[in-house]
Length: 288
Image 1 (cartoon, helix red, strand yellow):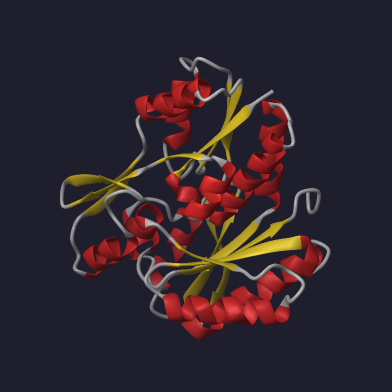
Image 2 (cartoon, rainbow, N blue to C red):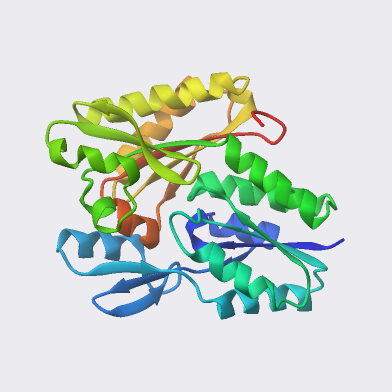
């Protein structure tokens, strides 16, 4: 069977990786001062960071079902017999709902996967799906591989302020920290599609150092540095992200060099400038 892979723009996969595997990407939308723009097409992270710092109105919205249907139809026209469509956590966005609606009208069967994640935590699941499809696996097996890798992947992140997560309604139980946000720097994680508090620390430097330690520990728990892939995300903080990626590479030399990927406008709008994140993804067959 010929299985096509579709995802959304919040996977933040590098363009060359998308092209190499023939992955179709459906963009989410960013609304700046009332004007809707497509992520990765006509708005970039710098514009969103500047808008947030200037306290301008920034919001996000999911793709329409018709956008997904166009992607599924294009995949079928290109020869796909089935489609696996992997997306941002349904607790963060209505994107999965749009994909499910579109799948009902697609010309070929579509397996929609709620990754329960976002960013490269989802991106590595998309890559695992693409590689499985290239090996000739059917849609059900490919979808299972994507779910398994997403479930095994760990992510931690620290934000400069909880303001943006709170305003967007995506802060989860970490909302309890709002009253003490000046006294502590929360280290956050994703648990089954939700943002949760991992730890409370006193400074930004300590939060980043602790995030590094947790990433190294996760790699060791997955079987060692040769058994994982890593990514470092940031929004408008390239120097700090580069330093963090370098330290991780020194401590985990057996792993591929961490991918350094700036968060896009959609996720950036909710976490805010200065955010750093680390993703540890066990290689397929590890940490399931």
